[in-house]
Length: 133
Image 1 (tube, rainbow, N blue to C red):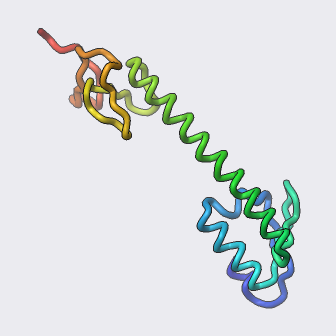
Image 2: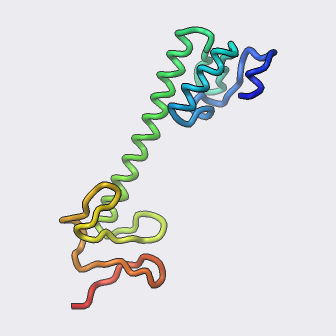
Image 3: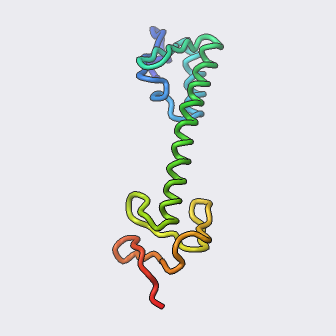
């Protein structure tokens, strides 16, 4: 991108637009930067984007929003699956953890879910054990 600021560039070749900008801020800054330099994007996978025109910048923004939404939706889906697994006492990936009744985790309450007889033991990492009555 730094080289595109200088003279002699008309196009930046990318694999796919989603690989050059990771979030909305980077995309907006990148589109403005390339617009000012009068440089466009040539994609190996996907459409070429002429960022010297309003239409090209609009298309770059729309395609970028789809990419961002895809990442956010995937994150929400993974978080929901992790929450469900934790509430059912199943491993959620990585070191096993247990949801304690009434405690808040990630903005969600575990109240009503899980086994009230479980607690977290950190003797050898977070391991679920039954309380002794």
